[in-house]
Length: 560
Image (tube, rainbow, N blue to C red):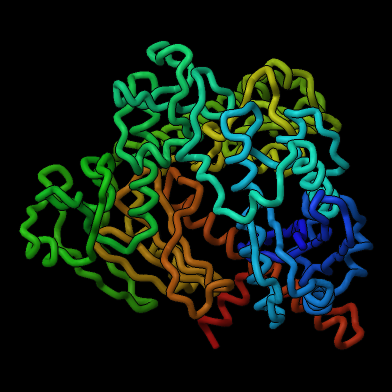
């Protein structure tokens, strides 16, 4: 029999996941319920106790605190399953996490087969209005009633059941591979579901509302630039800039995640530095860590970025090296320009508002909320929709809650405003903290003095300054302004060889960058210490535990 299943989970500050609830219903050939199962999971520790998170929907705080731990909850579900059951997950992400949790709990996954319903449903409804999205979104487009609240596992499963029954989706469809709806989907112009259409006659990619599209013709449709870039489509003037921005962002993200010192296009005879703008619009970027390897491949250095051999030098504390490093302002990419613009507008908005001097507490809180450079969408308590910054519907609202990404607002239970029509294209990928300010005359010595003052080991070369706290390893690109920061979390990735990942923040000075590092890791250590103290209290039966500060831990690690 087929089993409809859903799982909710929460992610802590360290990027670790933990399940909160799981529900499943076994159905007959008509999708009618034969048997059901539901279980809650007790949070592993206080870092997962985000009670306002949507993953805890439908239940109370006490329900979760009194729930089973990971092993007995998953073990009960695995024993409920039957050998012939086929698990029907909505999407692959939930199943991947479920598999990880079973491995953590050391429980054997008894499911013989798994299918992902979204792949089948999207293909089944391809070309129709409201053909993609969550089960709730697809049901809403068809006036199919669903239980509330959303993101409660048992309600989510019932919503899936209501959907497949209402659209008359037959179980025999699951016996064949799903239709590749993204590649094979076609749509008409002005499609609300597929914003990009490809005209095969002109071989140009267009926005779905482009005037150059042929009338009354179904064309290959796409939800993002990802597939068109992979296919190397040529963009129409209507989406040319966005296409190049997406290509730029893809390449920059790929380079940032790598350890390459030098990059080049596969077909090119020129190699570049990591941040050279002349390579970021290529379709096939490759790279290497060695300057000599580039030369041996027959390639020559770029005349624009002028790459040079990189020789790393290690520095031991408390030795101070006087080697000034001057950073030059660079050409910002699209997302970085947006971040700088949001920062400037936020500063001006706050200064203008606070000059009045007659703001009420509610008005002040509203100004503070709307002028956060790291937010792109806002919602108000008691309302069901979220808005962009310039939406007229947001005027007069208070108790505002902000989101950096479209998906974060949706997952929080809000729907997009029909007036301003927010979209994922407005997601904040980079932001500059509003407390930042430019500080002239900063060099490598600035960071050396700060690291020495806080007893932190460090190293630098011609480009990067790398420092390490007991909680993280940080890499600062000294050649860039605003400053870009990369990070490895040593708490969650201890002993790991994982690569640096780019922080979603930019900084106007080296001092601000260093202060952010200390605040970030200080908060992380405080959470860990609080958890350890709590465990100690429970073990000793005492409520008195000496507080431990981040600085004291750092100093102890440096001066045993």
